[in-house]
Amino acid sequence: MISVVLQRPLARALVMSAYVLGVEWARALVMRAPGAMFPALILGGAALVLAAAGWQPKRLGIGRDRLLLRILGGLALGVVLLLPAAVRPGSAPLLPFGLAVAAIAISIGEEIAFRGALYAALEDVGGAPVAILGSTVLWTAAHALSHPPAFLGAVFAAGLVLALWRWACRDLVGPVVGHVLADLAL
Amino acid sequence: MRRPALLAAAAVAYVLAAWAVAPGFYDGFGPPAPYNFTCPPPQAGANTKPTSGHATIKVINGISDAASAYDDDGQIVIGFLPGAFDVTGKTSVSVDVVPLDTCPKPPAIAFVTNVYHVTADAPLLKSVTVTMRYSNLEPDPSDVYLASDPNGTWKSLGRSSQAQPFTVNTSTTSLGYFAAGYPSASPPPNTVTVGGGQTLPIVVAVLIVAVVLAGLPLAVVRRRRSASSEADADDEA
Image (tube, rainbow over all chains, first blue to last red; front, side, top):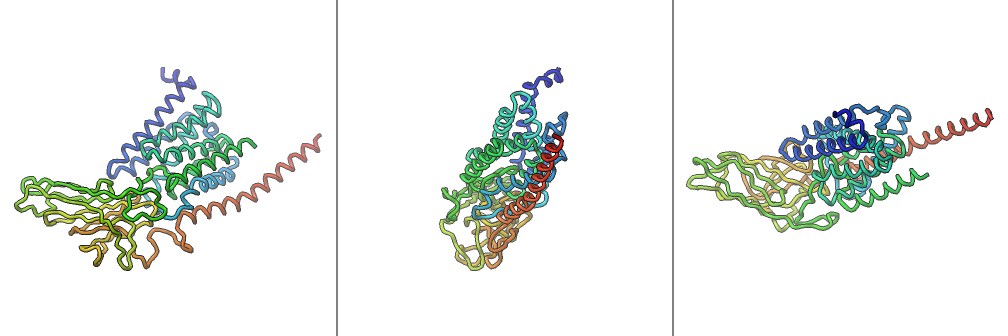
């Protein structure tokens, strides 16, 4: 029954959307408990990676071809994501080692879930426009519990940049590299 | 051409959207709530004055209960263990947390938080934990400082390992005026300082250099490959 439902693109996209949103909202709520930040980020990242189960790496945008270009693109995306914070006065603290590991885990998990699996599932439903807009809207909704409303515009715009990269370059390595850099630096 | 143009437009839209909210993109840990400054730095933008707080700690079987006292902004939290107070003759202990409405600048110390006056109507018997939140617009503090008079001598209480980003923790056996900061004679801790700048601008500058330096040869190689494949196609024709 479940496998029959999941063979339908729309049903699969809906199930995947609910799963990814559920993981992100649960993570945001658990992180509010004292001392729960590290396990919530690590387990949340791992649960998001599970969204890619059953997908071919190529459909997710993962591959070794043009690897240097993909990594270079990721550095460029990192520059774009960090630019507004970099030109402001002030500073961000260096993350303690444990939190840096957790930041890497959640960044990779989010990219694989949103710009990887969810993007591919939505692309099967309505092509690139649905994949780009759908994954960006869901990415913004996923951050609704962890971010004040004032930040959601920037979150949406960041998601749009990463999703457009995924579409334009058929690549997920760049968004992963850019996202990890942004999370580590902020 | 359409794809790069869309990507560039989205990047510009992102920079504008992120510029509207300090510090910009935050993820994973979520952005800290804006810090309510007594004396806001110029880059803080709109600022709300900090609030005070009050806690009434019950005395149960002759021992003060475990409790926390904090301001309504959550910018300072004092944690009390059971039996933290000498409660002789008392049925409860009253604790007040009040932000100082001035910004003392003691010699050789740079404060990055407001100064909070924490008082209790019973003497302390055990050490208490102090957690202070600070703004992402300020350097990372190295210590929490305590004084009995804000215009007098400030004593460093050090700091424990960082449990949450943008918070600093320590413990103390006396209450008084609290603020977090760093010795002003040294650069702010945990920041890489080159030419007066700090970590993030350096990270971004290094990334830009890496992209340009690695991107140019890659672009040349790809152009040559493209040109040679076109030439091969012409030869075959």
